[in-house]
Amino acid sequence: VTTDETAGEIDHEVADLDLAELGRRRVGWAEANMPVLARIRHRFAKERPLAGLTVGACLHVTAETAALLRALVAGGATVVACASNPLSTQDDVAASLVADDRIAVHALRGEGHDQYYAHIDAVLDAHPDLTMDDGCDLVSRLHLERPGEVGRVLAGTEETTTGVVRLRAMEREGALGYPIVAVNGADTAHLFDNRHGTGQSTLDGLMRATNMLIAGRKVVVAGYGECGKGVASRARGMGASVIVTEVDPLRALEAVMEGFRVLPMAIAAGEGDVFVTATGNKGVITREHLAMMRDGATLANAGHFDVEIDLPALEQLAGGRRRTVRPTLVEFDLSSPAESGESSRRLYLVADGRVVNLGAAEGNPPAVMDLSFASQVLVLEWLIAHRQELEPRVYEVPPEIDAHIAQLKLETMGIEIDALTDSQRAYLASWKLGT
Ligand code: ADE
Image 1: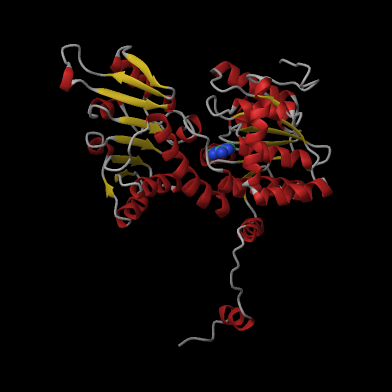
Image 2 (image 1 turned 180 degrees about the vertical axis):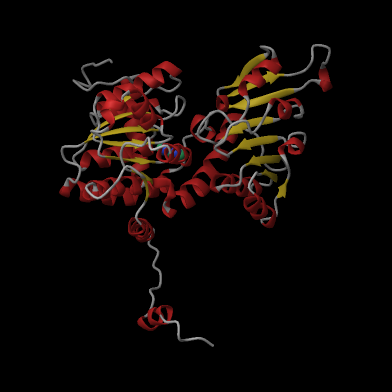
């Protein structure tokens, strides 16, 4: 733990506090584009619903997350934060949170495995009353390494689908020690954050990393969940021909009826120019798939963990012949030594196979994080108000919070909608009125 004059007594470990000024401006820009969260922050500043509570947050440390953490502080919370991915921290934002907001941040872009967990431990050392997680690493570490401390946590939230899958496994095994709300289950979160947010920011990451022209490429999207839908539709909108791979028949059918080609990966692997994984599962692109890819094929992962592409196999196939060609792009030379010139085969990996929208771009834009982070803060408030009634289970976001956020967002966008008339309401409530 390092401290210095600017940050006073705040425990922290960030890359460079001199970046704070840059970070502050970036956070200001994000906040200006997160009007729903701003409204809630103003109310929180008056009502202080989180007074006296410590929130331990394991999130991507971005400008949008800074806006979220500042709203928690406005609500009276003490906040301790670490990163939910070793490659997603924006160092200038981390510096600003420490220097300007006096929030204890333990996060560095590019931190190693041990440092990543040391930072999670630093958050747990603060004995949070509430946890806010993105991917379940904080919650799983707490339950596995400090079972004796689980009981003092009141409640928590989880931001992402991958984290919810892990939480449901904990719930099934009776291992979950306190109630956690799956924020991603809210319509205002997954419909917009995943489809519009991840859809756009994944393409953004791919383009920043490579500067490639998307038009005319064959883009293979693995997984047709909300994220995959977003990536596929954005890639098509930019002129790519898109192939979807799926394991779920219903989703495969959805993709077919949207006009996408659907193929098994074993065939798509030999056809694609660009591969984007968005499944939340491991082993989606295997050694066999890598071995059949065309020269110049580019690989990116939009899922939470770096397990979707078999990275050890990629390293092995290249036998050490790898070089960084651009800041977040690594070339792997898979040509056999006898091959040269036109028969050579090089594959390109974006952002080390880590979550591409945050590793190679800035994550989902603030306008969409506004929705899921508004859910985060309102859900925390709800958890505190209802904590006596809740059991150690995974809960969905209460529908009234979802509807409230959608309404607020429309208001901030200046969009009005119709309301049901009394007679329409009566019609919907009646079973006697037919043809
Ligand atoms: N997840 C995806 N995009 C994000 C962002 N901009 N900030 C925090 N978490 C994110």
